[in-house]
Image 1: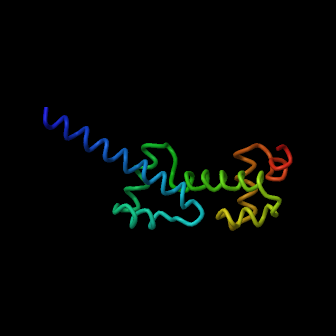
Image 2 (image 1 turned 120 degrees about the vertical axis):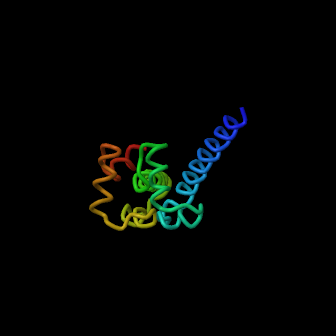
Length: 117
């Protein structure tokens, strides 16, 4: 009885930690790193990486990229700032990689995305 309760507590704590890590990635997508997460949450970077992959099916980098793309989309629709400027502001420093990732994710260029609104 007692050990079951303890297991549930541990599982809940771990799930809550993963949720908190996901919220942190969302809030700090532009500039957070895996070592930042390790310091923030008191775990080894490899542990965080493994837990994220296990729980979400995505790597830290994939989760961060997804959040960065959300930021880009919001700014594409809400501002008329140049695409390159938006991409940089949202954490994308390599424009070639940015355009490739954006098109893979949305099936269109950032410009097409913006013009469809």
